[in-house]
Image: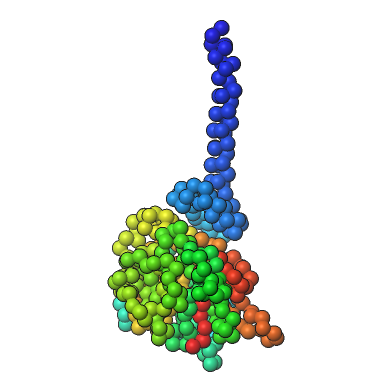
Length: 394
């Protein structure tokens, strides 16, 4: 009789706990599915879902789920690549881009296979590597100011490649622009930097290209300054791209390759260096979520990066559709970068556009670098929530 009475008393409470537990399990399932399945088909929805979950549980748990998502996508892409004969899942948006070749006027095949870092280092120092550079984008005074090449360095992932854009800084000027939301910044910043998130109207007539910036403020609180206004303070030893008063650009660790100076008018930090003084970062092969903005540096995903040659003439943008931080670093080193850093990751945040004035009116014709990039019309010509870089004719 007593046991029966206790069962009656506790059954509603037990049901409530079971319902609560069931709700938690369903939420975990939906969250995991959202970050492991949705991004493959709907990159924008997956990115927004990840942002929503970060506000609920913080960046670290979401980063763990994203790592699971990256692994599932990588396994799927490798299986699909096997089925389609090992064809890469990355390609130029305009494969017949007009422009002069910068490699003996002939197109070389894409570089494939593992690279000897020592050989690469020697090539970086002694001569620009010949990896099939082809003239790319709008011309400046009748000649190419940029060149592009595609390389495949990971023999385990025939679906993956790294697209490279070499930017001639003797012809083009680099600029930085914060987004209207990211990286996080003090209130009232829009009064000091008007038009947050878009290329200023006075620069659009000379605009050649624009590409994505770095992580959100929550992922590392990496420093940024624009037009002499500090949005987030710099962090020692973190990879930094800096623009100086005379227009030249440098990349290096803050406090090492980049020293505090009144001549710096803008800088952007993001993660540890990929390449320093022609050498790969020795920690690239060690998985470390905390050091890389909560995303494991060994995770396989879309990654973007930026490097510069030893003489400072060429800036090199890199984007890969299935890379670790180490593969990204090797790609930039192969392309001639003497110092290099990672920018943003994930397919939805990888953007590179070229611009040309339309034949009529004030419209700009824009073209994305890769077919697989998420197309966001007028992304940097209208107000963007994320920071970015852009290039104008000198």
